[in-house]
Length: 327
Image 1: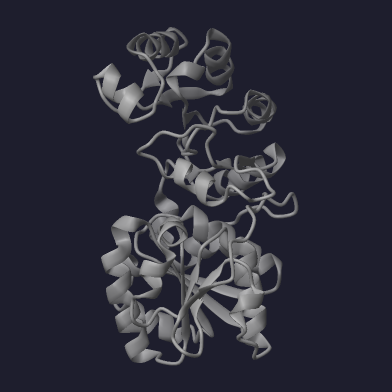
Image 2: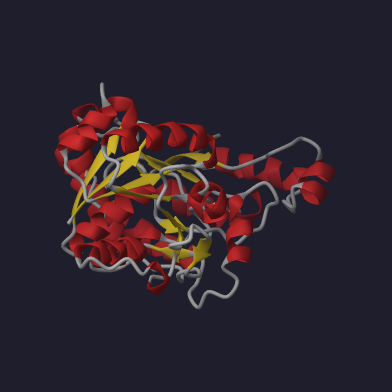
């Protein structure tokens, strides 16, 4: 069984990275194609001889996906295409309406894809048995198998972006690699997808905010730092500093084993002298937090971001006091 995962832009996709590592852990042959880095992306996919093609996208990539599916199906008319990513989770029926899309993953994709690959390998296509799929039945009607539960990070799996770098050496030249420590956010700002996701999965039995084991994330970072030229690290979590206990454990290891400075995300109402000292002491040189608007009424009433002007100002002041730049 061979699956090829496809993305548009030339930066490691955290969704594809997690899925690719997970699939390989469970014995599924998996490769990745970056559309924008291929002279002829469809031909590149064909050469890999996939049994299944997975496309991951955000909402801004919808039109690209429509064209990509059309071009892929022209060359590989019998190869099934499954679409996933945050856009697919929120708008699965709209994506399934695109001609050429066979399946949509409406949940965390790791287990869904493992089970889908196994089913195809065994010649079974009763998609109702696999949670997390939206599909068409034999009469063409849109059906859903329901939502799969949130997936926790496995302590046995360390994400590996080597397949990206082997196929696309240019991607290994990024001297400020991005990493992600968690999925989710405890807040519900109206402009952000997190609130929608929590509402969609309100019946899930597992926690929405999930973290990698600190030791696993350190190994993931170390693997890159040992092999490639790295100047600094960027943690791009929705909210890197949300869990103080986890953060303390991680930073204690980071400052001993990783020599590179880093940048991370926070939220103004979480910033304290204690947090700033902890971050700065471990090598944080830039802290990123959202202001969204200079109008406090819009911020609090419309955007549902309950942060005052004074909290924003104090966050910046504390950060600068401990030697961190503000983004």
